[in-house]
Image (cartoon, rainbow, N blue to C red; front, side, top):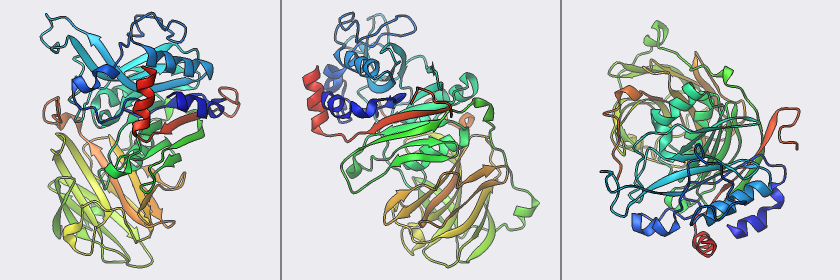
Length: 466
């Protein structure tokens, strides 16, 4: 971290906010409570105390990392969001208290321009994180800045109603800071695809800081707006992370309208029975093959139906149109409704739904919609250039009452989808996975964050800091 401070100080000038990835400070390989314990610090509740660690580094024991982060924010007059581990003492009379007498939480912490701790969020929806506990009381954490109201999430949180929908509907955030160690789950749960679709669907700026470890499919950071990606980094061939810096428009939450559309009699006349079934991310989808240059087709999964209209100059590659509605059980359970046009892994239809990074077909036009039972629908388009995933150009997609409309003429289409979440149909309430000036006259804000590569150097720097 000291190396980061020394090498990047120049870049931090006139930056408004910086975001670091989940596990970016201590690494993501520490899988037991005892392994990670020595890296954790006590993080006080900023709603109860006023604390600037850079000025009062000795107010609490064992807070050297927080003091460093606070000074980094204060010395550069910027907001700073980092993911770290919180170690909170608990009483033996507490039936949930771990044996060592401490709760350990995966935690986002936020400092303002003066280096003061202003927000602390304990990750609610853990994913294979036996080293941490889930907070007993769910938290909805946000903070106000001079350029918008920010909510904060961590990785797997994005798939669940709490805290996502609470932040959008009750708090009215305009921006999301998202720390993550996201492993791509193709086709529609890639980091850049799903995170950019969140910004588009919910009219927020979405600042996604991911770790970078391509050997484990952990990659893809981006700065996304409702109109598309302003900047993103996705490189499976390099072990090096990248610093993303860009100007982001300041938006207001009065633009938020949840898109609703349906299937009418016009689309129903194109109804066809599915031709085959395929397994996609553990779920069985109904599929049809796309063998024409252009056509309109509707297929259903029980009473959930999806419509697709498309046009292309040539038939190239094995593409299929699929539909699913039901409980997703792989690292769930959570209820999904999905319409998807995708590139199959090979010419064999049994490969449709298996993950592939390669595509070879361009589409001049496509339009997709479905009779979703939810307003919480995220639209995405991911293309592939020689195995490297890409996103459409800014303003290239349209998502409204007519569905998702777009094209893939610059690079071949890997997938385009509409992913709906029906929170009330999740099985139970818990999933089981494991135990310039600051704002310039044009109303743009400078955002900076790091797509970090996890390697031994980061643990070495942290060990020396502690």
